[in-house]
Every structure is written in C-alpha cells, then in structure tokens.
Image 1 (cartoon, helix red, strand yellow):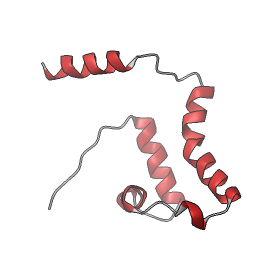
Image 2 (cartoon, helix red, strand yellow):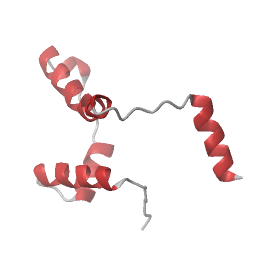
Image 3 (cartoon, helix red, strand yellow):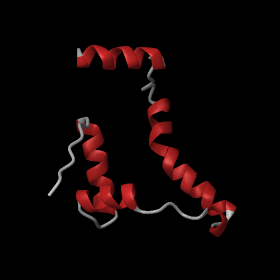
Image 4 (cartoon, helix red, strand yellow):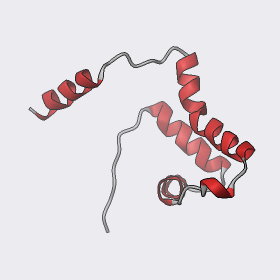
Length: 87
C-alpha cells in the first residue's frame, strides 16, 4: 500500500491532532477527509455559509499574521533555496 509522508512542525502536528480530535476523527481520517472531500458547490450554499467557510479556512493564517509569524522571502528566494537543497 502506498504511503505519504510530510514534514510538519511540532505546532502544526499538535494543531492537526487537536482538530482531528475535535471532529471525532483519527489524524489519518481528518487529513484524508480534508484533502479528498469535494468542496461545496458554490451555488448550493448561502453567502453566510460561504463567509463562514472562508473565515474558518483563513483563521489559522490570520492568527499567524497577528502573532507576527510572517514570511518575507520572495518567490525567487524560495526557488533558489529549493534548487540549493537539490544540489
């Protein structure tokens, strides 16, 4: 059976584990449901529901910004770092 491995920070792992627990799922079930479930049909949901979903999606990133956890690297910086790692 194929396997998938990703590197996470300790904080990211704790956040995923907590979200999985709050939804009553294992970490694997939570990640698979988030990655593989089809997004809601835009025409089938109300504006209020769309706003709620968007707020939930952006909440972790907004928290990072408010905490000052910003990335200042440009796209070119990221590409160069990736190339350097492969070399």
